[in-house]
Amino acid sequence: MKIGIAADHGGFALKEQIIELIQTLGHEVIDFGALTYDAQDDYPDFIIPLAQAVTTRKVHKGIAVCGSGVGAAIAANKVKGARASVITDSYSARQGVEHDAMNIMCLGGRITGIAVAEELVKAYVDAAYTNEDRHNRRLGKVETLENNW
Ligand code: RB5
Picture 1 (cartoon, helix red, strand yellow):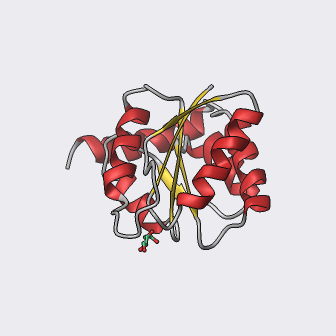
Picture 2: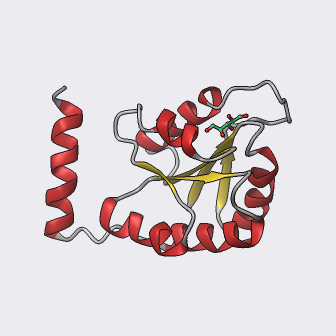
């Protein structure tokens, strides 16, 4: 699987650790930056290109990291087709994909340590959308709004 990842300075250190983990799991990682630590950088500059790559299917799934995960989720969800959420537990990391077709998992580099992040990444990467009618129906309602406002 091809996994895109992006982070600002608040998520930079965790991003570097997650990249190693994903490679260890045998997946390809595309890094949308920041490529160096810059305490003045802005998360939209990295998160939006990641979200665009996810929604145009250049990567299969995205992981976005900022200090809290919140700004990353807000920015990513402005891109049509992005379904991003802040995740802190492995149940949501898996179920968010299975039920809600979450395609960008957002983490807080100042919130989540690497041990928990490893569990979250594994649960997220391994999960697949169920394609069940009830989930398609709910997703369709979200997409209807997205396409008509
Ligand atoms: C950057 O200092 C911080 O505000 C940002 O990474 C993030 O936490 C926003 O949600």
